[in-house]
Each structure stands twice: as C-alpha cells, then as structure tokens.
Image (cartoon, rainbow, N blue to C red):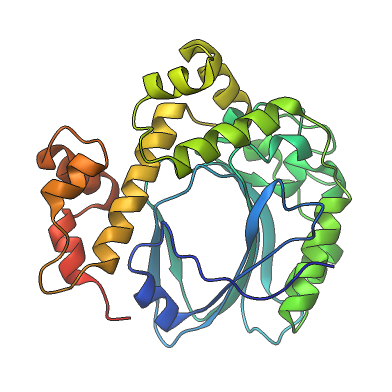
Length: 306
C-alpha cells in the first residue's frame, strides 16, 4: 500500500494560489513498485458557486484521468463519469470547472508510460485524449471499438470504461481508498521490462535536473547518443522531442520564478533569460507570451496572493 501523505508541487499550474483557493487539490505517492514510472497521483475535488477556468502548462508526461461531474456524495453511476488517457498537451491546457466534481489522475514520469502500454509509441497519443479502454481494453465494457483497437480508433468507437472501475476510483470517501484503487489498476497492467524506457526517464531527468543542458547538442555531448537516436527514443517513449522538453522546462522555471518573486518588483527578467539560456530578454518574453497568453511582467502582476 502506498504512502498517502499529500505532497505540494505546483509546477506548471498557472496562478496556483488562485486554483488552490477554489478547489481541494492533493498529490499522493504511488505504491513502491510503481514509483520508478510515476511522478504521483493528483486528486481534485470542487464545489463551486460559479464556473472557474483553470490553466496548466503541461509537463512532458502522459496522464490517465478518471473524472466525474456531479454531486460529490452521489454514486459514480449517478454522475457523468469517464476515464481517459491524456497524451502530452502541446499548448496551454484549460479546463472549465462548474458546480461539483472530482478528478483522480495518474501522472507518469516522462518515459514511464510505455512499459504499461507497449503496443504503441508514446508519440501516437501526443496532443490527444482517448478513452481509457482504447489503450487498456480490459478496462472497458466491451462496447464501442472493442479490445485491440488501435491508436486511431478512439474517435470512432468511444468504448466506455467499466463502471466498476470508475466507481472504485471515484466513489470512495477517502484519498487512501482512491490511491489504493489507482495502485491496483496499474499493478494489474504491468509494467513490462523496458530498458529504453529506463534510458528515456534518465535523460529527461538529466534535462530537468541539470540547468546547464539548454540545447540538444549539449544532451548529445553529455550522453554520447546522436541527435537522431535521441529523437527516435523520445518519440517512442516520451512523446515529444528533446528540444520540446528543454523548452517546456524553461517555461516552467520562468513561471516558478514569477510566482516566487516580490510582487512589487518581480524577477530580473533579463538575468533570468540569460540563466535559462534564451538569447535575450525579448526571446524569453516571446516564448512565455506564446505559451501562457500574456507577457511575463503582466503574468507576475496578475498573480493571486498566496
């Protein structure tokens, strides 16, 4: 059984203080056998008097998402419940929350999803959200596209998720029970041994942990792999290329700096641009604005107080 102590980690969430003021948000640790492949479980409950839109700059991670919309005390069968595999989002992800609902998510480490679903390259899911039973046929009811459907069949078949599985994850009244259900689902599906997945997770960890790696050429030099080999490995096991991962982590870091800065002054954007490997401050501003929708100075000014 996994440790269910909630963990605080808001990387990638746009204005996390605003989100945390409106929803109940937690992160939990998976079972020990799953920890090499998963970042965490993430759980959100909400009961809102008015609609609220939350925004996330996606990580280079696959997610499995169980969700229900309706009164939190009602059985899952009496709510709008579903489950899906969420590929890496290439742009800003926005979700409008209304009334009441619950989401229980599994965030995989970059490179950690393929051992659970080895039939397809992870790039097949990038930018897509497909029914859970498209990827894990035994999680379905046997309707729709059916077992063995390929990566392109989700839109046509829309196989439904087994109501028993939805209820096991979404209906319990405690996080402890929800985490146990998520552990049980994943442990029943592998993971299959995959040295390439281990290598991919190691390389993404290097990008995330070593701030000096700002270009693919530096990753080539650090690993001894060719740029083409890196591209193939990342396409098959991460879902996006190494350059995309580098750029995404730079934006995450810029967001964190803006959120941690003194609201009166904000960070030194020119110094931050140089530190993160941008050619100049204007380069940082362009990339930040293209991803978030507003320039970094405007974002910092608009943050909610923690």
